[in-house]
Image (tube, rainbow, N blue to C red; front, side, top):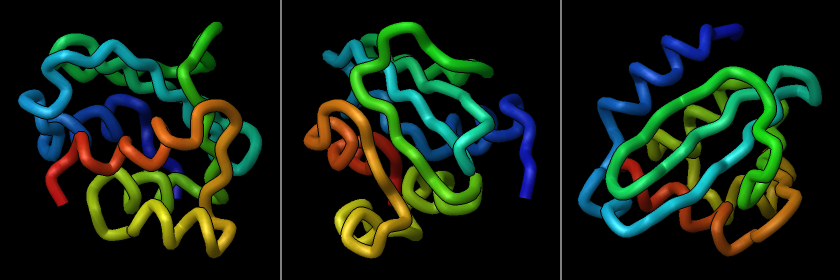
Amino acid sequence: MHLSVEHIGERLQRSFRPDVGADLIRTYQFRIAGEDHFHLRIENGTLTVHEGAHGAPCVTMLFPDVGTALGLLEGSLDPMEAFLEGQLRSDGNLILALQLGGLFHR
């Protein structure tokens, strides 16, 4: 499944919880199947989704496919379970990676 960054952004905006992200400033990098990159920027309750790699993300999350990444963000995939089953790997702050799911309605 290949989705445009605009489509991913639209889907994530619908489930984003600005109240939970109100005091946060974080950048989450996503690498899909080792090639495609996009990143989420959460800044004071606002979510933006950008194409490409970010120069200094808080954490980089690696997924086998975009469906798995969206499953984590949209709540159909448990972050800890995905990590334990090898569907999610991260480079950087693992705690921030596991907290990401709480920023979206499940």
